[in-house]
Image 1 (cartoon, helix red, strand yellow):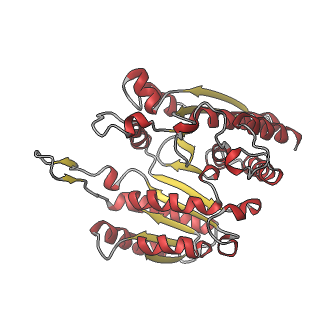
Image 2: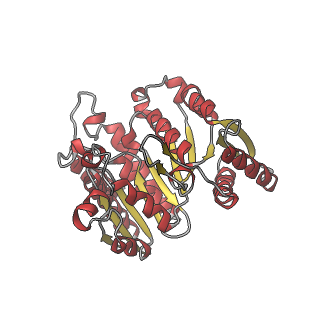
Image 3: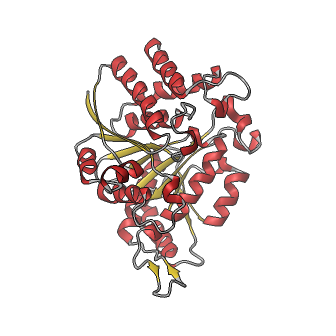
Amino acid sequence: MEMNIALLPGDGIGPEVIAQAVKVVNAVAKKFGHTITFKEAITGAAAIDAVGNPYPDATHEVCLASDAVLFGAIGDPRFDNDPSAKVRPEQGLLEMRKKLGLFSNVRPTFTFPSLLHKSPLKKERIEGTDLVFLRELTGGIYFGEPRGRNEQGTKAFDTCVYSVEEIERLARMGFEFAMKRRKLLTCVDKANVLATSRLWRETVQRLAPEYPEVTVEYEFVDAVAMRLVQWPKAYDVLITENLFGDILTDEASVISGSMGLMPSASLGLKTKLFEPIHGSYPQAAGKDIANPLAAVLSASMMFEYAFDLMDEANIISEVVNLSLEKGIVTEDLSEGEKAYKTSEVGDWLAEQIAKM
């Protein structure tokens, strides 16, 4: 198969971890006889520095012309520490989601047998956890209008807006995911307080009879936040709006023991995008110490969701598990043992794939 993949390394450790994902993708392509063409483009703070725009038109054209996008991270403390900045790296991420129609962020949370002790939660609570969030990405309070401040600067306001269409397309994807898994769907909302949440609940209730095999649960977001740390194995597929999903998926990510392990996919109307869930971690940039496994597992999701190639996806997951079992890990997971460099982990993964 011929594949055209856009590379958006982004900021901070993004270029370093994406470089390791590329090594693994190339090793998989060689093993299975695929032809990969990569095209790199700028985004985030790097793009602001270069052209003054965190998501330039040229980058958008590269994404549209590709079968999938591998994305690193966005963010720079120069902008975080300047509340008056008019242009920010994160604006590029929101613009990219909007222009590419990426309305669903797929965020799995699962555990690794060799790392159960690294989780802040007790082993018996998390062992066997395998859940997935579908977070709506292009609506809600991050995009609603009006937004801003009054003339005096004494009040600020953000508007949360959702349409039935936006909710329904994500909910249907959630039902379809549930049908392929344990047939359990949880709708996360705040319907006792918010009008938008009541619309979410009404829409999911209307769709539910079309999927009679799926058990649907409705939970308030605060209850889900509590149950995620009490009994995460109770969940399978969870669907939720943009802000709630942003918060809950980061909470869920630490169940595995490290944010540096969890991948994600953003799906929608056009090109699919795959990225590690961690941030740009600027303190580690250029030091060759960042954990590349989330980026590598994002490549695994790419083979599955963009190309429907499960053997290729599975071999990446297998070699990542092997690296954890053998201690071929970066300093965040080394526990006093030898810590490998980011590039060394990437090299080892690619070599193992060639041997398998």
